Image 1 (spheres, rainbow, N blue to C red):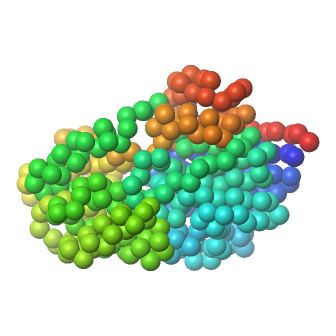
Image 2 (image 1 turned 135 degrees about the vertical axis):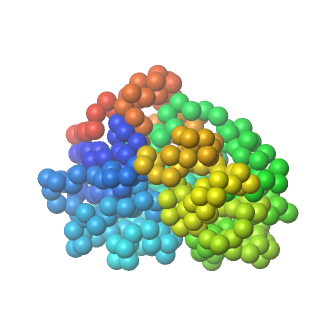
Image 3 (image 1 turned 90 degrees about the horizontal axis):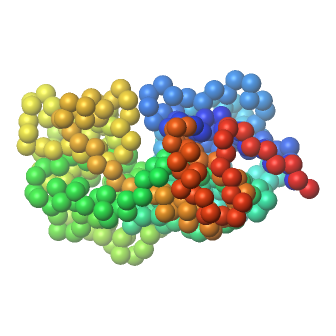
Length: 369
């Protein structure tokens, strides 16, 4: 079976996800995102015909440039991603199983929950001799489930953290300590991601308020049975019942979890801008994910107005080693990692899988019977 992978975008840089997989002549595009830094988009010029687009999850760096794909190309996403509609093109998407198997353009596609975001999936295309695309994933989420990933000859792996290996319990400790100190704390987060994880970690009894976008995600997750277990679902129900919705005009109080993630828009943007104009010190802001260039988050962190403290939503080095042990790839393409960091990751993964090679370019090809 002839298998080829081309990273249109997402290899050698922290850039938008967009990978072309060719299996026995069928051409499938995996994700088509924008960002996370402003203006970053995949170049689809000269890519040729595409048989279908498969979406791993609904974050902008995976779906933000879907309008670049011709509207007659079939688009596939999970019903959760379609419901949360991170891009207008998702309105025409066909259902992709959250955990199961289907056939797309004649290619066997297996999926499982990837934990990073509600409705997010990993995908294996073409069985064990094909390609496994992890999408973004984490092994540390309390809110979202991670299904075991199967073996594949080629693995395109979320490697955004490179050799970072601090467990979430350690990385999150300073954030949780500030949340429990009683100081009003603004935590800008993408609505469909770590927001509910943070709320669950802070625990019941604390004053935790969610913006409307986060509450919408919570309601969809409850309705579709997406939360990892009954305990997490019950805690989310009680949180929604106990706390008022966080709004743009809300007074700083307790823990405020709001979109957007870089305080560039939404309730987080309004609350942050208001406090910043007033020069208030009564509200502390912590950014917990990628601080995108050219955003209020980047400016605020640079001048000491806010802090960056990572909340793990991507795999640590230990998780990538475990992935290699489980999936036994011949070749691994580390996605979303700057090129200068790839050699260190390659050294750290030595011996994780027999004969493992790390991709050193944006194109991979296997032509075996």
